[in-house]
Image (cartoon, rainbow, N blue to C red; front, side, top):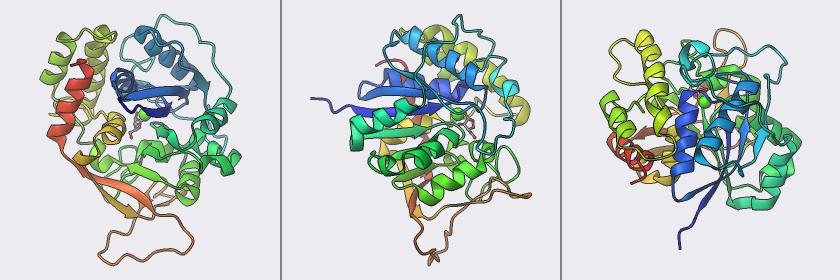
Length: 314
Ligand code: RIB
Ligand code: CA
């Protein structure tokens, strides 16, 4: 019997989030028990609609959509990235859906309560909703399974500032709460996600040899996203599928190299959003501060092959 991995996704779709959600919905061994739509690449309102669109295409409207945070913990206005992800977050596609019926954030606590240690939380977005989960359900969150977060850049350049990755930079206070109070957190940083670039020829093949419910959107959303990336990184053949790497790791940990370290987050000044870990051979540890897993390397070829297999439903 197949052992299904239960996942609660927190996302800001966004093109790479959309690919991650499609991968999760198509994977025969993943059961998506809910999707929290949060601000980030796009507004929370657009994230709700894009999530509904993907679930509608998949015929999985039974999966609860949950209203996540619409701004950082500090209450400051969020910054959106329509230039990279498109006016509606899915390239030039305008999803033909209204704001869907959705659950309030409290549904997250119900899911944690229902599934306990069997639940994996996959955070593909800013850290705000996840931090709220820690603050408001401190006793419960530690009863979940593992928490995976796309975020951070450890001694590699950031993508939002020279030192900061976008999910951490978008709400560094929230990221700091998660790093300082979380248990079982796995950080999936730019160190690997920047390299999760599937060549455009391969994406084209995935789109052509595709009889999944997502066949019609794969090319248009990737074309837009990769064209935008080409203007930032001339010569790049494709664009980083940051958020897909979390699911790929969840299902294929053998492709990834992980180290255990404490993670600190800077919240102010020019290094706002910087994530820091001590990678010296004899690291110094802070007392009463949690250890986390950080993914620092992966087998890109194996990642690509698995992506093609799942996305084409082979
Ligand atoms: O830095 C990459 C992350 O920021 C990804 O989650 C992407 O979708 C954006 O939110
Ligand atoms: Ca994202």
